[in-house]
Each structure stands twice: as structure tokens, then as C-alpha cells.
Image 1 (tube, rainbow, N blue to C red):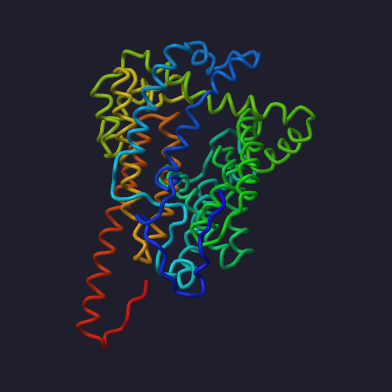
Image 2: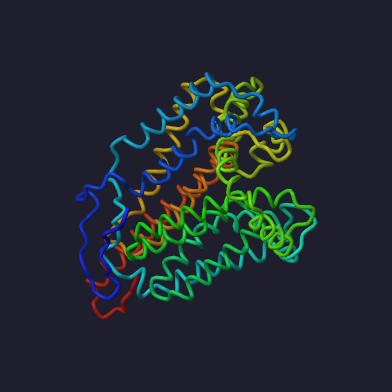
Length: 422
């Protein structure tokens, strides 16, 4: 889809407000549609591909796959998702949305530059001496809070780099490449989506993103997705071993033929994991309440149950499966609440008349995309942590907007006071 967004970088121009638009594809539906894509027939494609599933910790999950159960549970999740996507809220946010002020992409380029550079800096600090060489997968030098913050800000930094590129193309591109390189050094699947997140940033920054750009971004994501999964099996890790291994993999004649099956395996793993965890009868309401508690692990009681909420050391339960263990209706309600909260958090910061809106919207979109991944293959506590941050951002936006409104009111009463620009 080609955006018809006007370029307002040099002129102040009033843009039609969201509720006056007719686009059925909207920003608040993008994360929800992504979950639909993740939940489709990947498992069937992989299981019918004729490949022999290796005897790994993933094998018991695939072995528990049952088509009838899978269809029932996926249908329950899709019903909740459909309800969350169609429930009438404030108003939709068209893909052609932008603020009526030109502040975010002109006078505040330094802010977006700072966000993108902060993402790169945090990523470098998190990896530390293990950036180039590491003895094992997921080896970091920084303490866990820094690692978590670097992980959360990474997609936002890529979006910010895209926004920076609308004014400074080379600077924005270099920041995006640096962020993608750090993600590559950690063999994270987010690396595959770097180009798409960069394009989202350009779209939010007011640039027309043509269909061919989205096609190239999506194609690059499909080709790159198997790479992090293959690199995790290396004997040595880090940027240098991963680069050598990637060149070797890409030069193999049969690499492209494995892309479809690898994507199906990775995306489709959501469904067997859902079926496998749904069959676990040891999950209790108390476990779910502990996961929904945003307090630190030691206070919430998460330390006490974390070992039992996993299929394997590096295969956590999925939120979908945890709620499905209480029945299909519980799964539907959980997905509905999750999807509605995402829409609300995104819509609450989408104010076309506020110059700060684009900053908060970019952050919310980045976090919502992380949440889409987490709900399918990570536990409820991980999902809740991201949603809690989104709620906090929505509250922060409300307070910031109220402060600016109060300050401007004071300006009208005291015109000689120094102006505050946003």
C-alpha cells in the first residue's frame, strides 16, 4: 500500500483528523494483524514439508501437535483478536496519520537522533566485550536491567532512525545499520525486521513509502529470518563468527529453498507450543496472578514458579497456552483484553494537535510489536511487562500534554514570558 501522506516538513499544513479518514487499515490494527499472520498455517506447512524434525528440546512440542485441538484453540484466539480489532474505541488511526504540527520532524530532529543513538549505545553497553566474540549464545556483559532496557528500546531506535532519515538520510541510515548490526551480533529475530521498522519510521516522519520499498523490506525480512536461528547453533558466537557463518550459509545453493520451511517452523511453532502448554494442568490461577503482578520477581513471587513455567530451559510457556490451559473461553477473553489494551495505549497517544504525539506513538508501536512476538512464544509475565510500559507511556503522554496546555494558558495570560516550544 502506497501512503498518500503529504510532505509537511517545510510548511505548516492542517491534516485531516483521524476520524475523518476512511482507511480500513489503521495503525492500531497493525500489531493485531501481525498476530493474525503469526497464527496462520505455519505449523501445517512445516509438518507437511516432509522434513524430519530433529531430536531436540523442541521435539516434544511438535510431537504434541494435534490438528483438531489446534484449530479449536487458534479459532478461540482469533475470535478474541477480531473482537479487540473491531470494538468501537475513540477513533481509528489511519496509516496516513500525522500531527498537524511539523515539530517532530523539523525542530526536534535532535530528539529522534538522541533516541536512535541511545538505542545503539545501550546495545553496545549490553554486549560489551562480547560484541565481537562470545563463548555462548545470549552472553552479555551488562547487568540484567540494562540488557532488558536495550532489548525494549531497540525497535523504537530503528523507528527513530527512520524518522531521522527523513531529514538526514545518511545519518538515519547509518544509525539503522548500527542498530541492526548489534541485533545481528546477538542472533535475535528482531534483526530480520530491521528494514521494516526503519520504513515505519520514514512513514511516521512524513515520507511517502512506495509499495516496492515495503516489498523489498518484507522480502529482506523473509530471507534474513532463518539467519539468527541458524547462528544460534554455532560453537562460537558474536559478530565475527556470525558474519563468517552467514556468508557460508548464504553461499549454499540450497539456502533459499530452506527459507519457506524455516519461516514456517519459526512462525508455526506458536501453534504446537499453544497446544502443548494448553495440555499442562499444573498451571493455577495463582500462577497467572503472579505473572500479572508488575512488581519485581522476588516481590511478586515469580522466582518461586519460574522454573515450572517452561517447557525447557530456553523454551518458556506462551501466554496463549497458559490461558488456554483454563479453556478456550479463557483464551478468547485473554486475547481480547490484550488486543484492546494495545489499541487503547496506541490511540491515547495519537493526538494530531500535539507535537509530542509522534514521539510517544513511535514508542508505543515499537513496544506493541514486541508484545505481538511475546504473546505467541513467551509467558504472560513478559507480555505483562511490555503492556505495563505501554500504559505508563500513555499516562506520561497525558501528563505531558496537560503540562503543555497549562504552560500555554499561562503564556496567554503573561505574553512577555519566554515561550516553550514542543
